[in-house]
Length: 122
Image 1: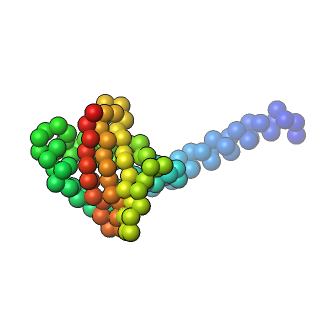
Image 2 (image 1 turned 180 degrees about the vertical axis):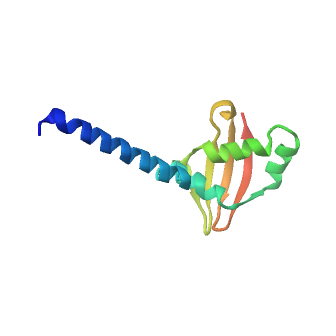
């Protein structure tokens, strides 16, 4: 069998395989959370959020909304190099993207809760 004869069989099998994989993975709603930024954000989003008094004051003054905070915690940029480790928690600075680029959250990621300590709007 020549290469020209084998190529259609290969491409047909590859196409069927891709369709099957997309079908099964599409139902599972899988995500690619292997990079450090995505892992930290996913870990924070699985926990209960608690707002500090300082962050509640900024939220109540209507400078930022909790939906914007959720958006930052889902798609923000985590400053992993400048994390601060304490006895049971790790503190991260998370910057927003696109229209929320001027907002930075300071989040303390503990074992069962995530405390939003500070919101900085530049």
